[in-house]
Length: 98
Image 1 (cartoon, rainbow, N blue to C red):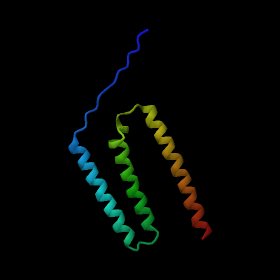
Image 2: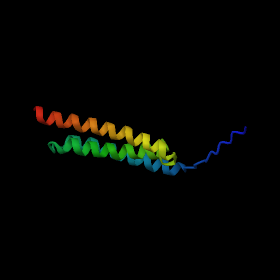
Image 3: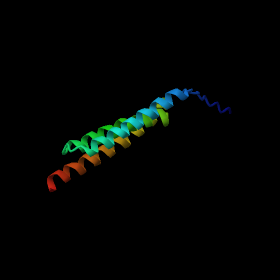
């Protein structure tokens, strides 16, 4: 019996990593700046939106999720969906108990 494992190599240039890293630094600076501005409840919404964008870049470029199989992407999507459901229930509960 022959085990043949087809492995694809994905070559990512260092320049692309540097651009993504600089973008992550910029988004971190924007998050810190927005936290110092009094926007009321929108501060949390903007911070979570920026964190979502940053996690997208980390998952796709640094963790190479864009090169994985569809089943692995489905597992990650299921985990993120479960996290967002718990997060939304937490914010929903918090908004009615104040």
